[in-house]
Amino acid sequence: MSSRTFSLANLLSKSTRLLVIQPLVGIGDMLWHKPWIDLLASRCDVTLATKPTVKATTIFHDAPAGFQILDIDRSQRGTTGRHDGILGLFRLAADFKKSGADTALILHYSSRYAIAARLAGITAIFGYGSSRSRWLYTAGNGLSAEWRQKHAIDRMAEYARLNDFALEKPVWQMSASAEGAGEAKNLLADIGFVSSGRGRRPAPYLVIGVGAMHPDRQWGADNFAYLISSLLTHQNQYRVMIMGGPDETALIEQITAQLSDRHSVAQLTRVSSFTGSLSGAIGLIQLSSGYIGNDTSLLNFSALLGVPSIGLFSQARPLAYSAHIIALDVLSDDDYGTPGIIHKITPKDVMERARIVWPDMTPSSPPSKN
Image (tube, one colour):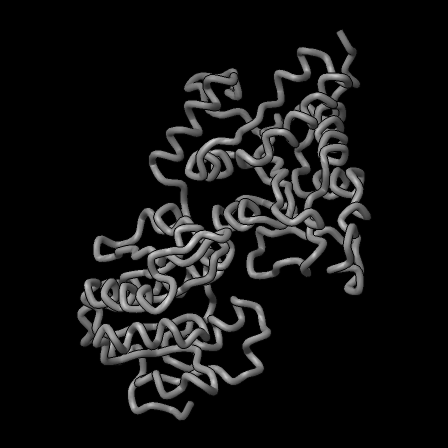
């Protein structure tokens, strides 16, 4: 795409509303785009068109008053959405038009969203661009073909640079909502994860994130149980919160069953689990002393919350966008992507790094079994 005569930054000063279209399905994808969307929302009214799977309402709960979310309803797990097919394209265009946007920024290569923006009568349309859809865009600079295979963060940074809304040092950050923080505090009080002093403040605890949709990203019940057992046995500073989604209930039950076989009732009062709401999970991570877990959205959330986070990376190379993400020096570059390679990471490896990340772990005597 050839360079246009005006940039996004120039248009924002005149724009009624900016439609930002980010149609990727993953929560991590949205978190990676967040610094630039935050920047745009600070400059003008934004409607963010995205899929419900990314939980944008939770991620942008504290966005400015002019920020709105428009759900893109496309097929999910074999079900047809109202924005699928030819009729769905026109429904999508109608929804874009209802947003009142006069400028669209499409953070994707798909021509479908550019066509919908055209049909909606949006006059300034920016997009990543491709050989067959460049004619659809009316503004800005697209990305060359080589960027299609790069990480979403790198694509976003380059696209922002080309279109005059670059961030010199992107900051990935967020906070728990008031509802999520309240849910977390209530749970901690209910399970006794509170300090003995006045004020009933949360006691120090580590969150252990056990979920992973892809089998090769899953560390397994045995490894997690062994790690948690080591935390109970060899230190008494931190309690443990095992965290997963509703789909991880059976996995968490396997882990807790193994812990019950190894530890006394007194020791097990230092362990609890959570499979509740995403806002509650974010609240619990924010109040924690740190996070250890598989390469999932919860790991990305913990990084944005500013919590020290040991990531168990195996199928993709460790993320490096945040200093809060801590990778283990166990796998070689050639190991990543190998099926089953996550089991090369041992609980001992994780425990050794945990002692460095949280040096105030105080040794405790081995527990006696009741």
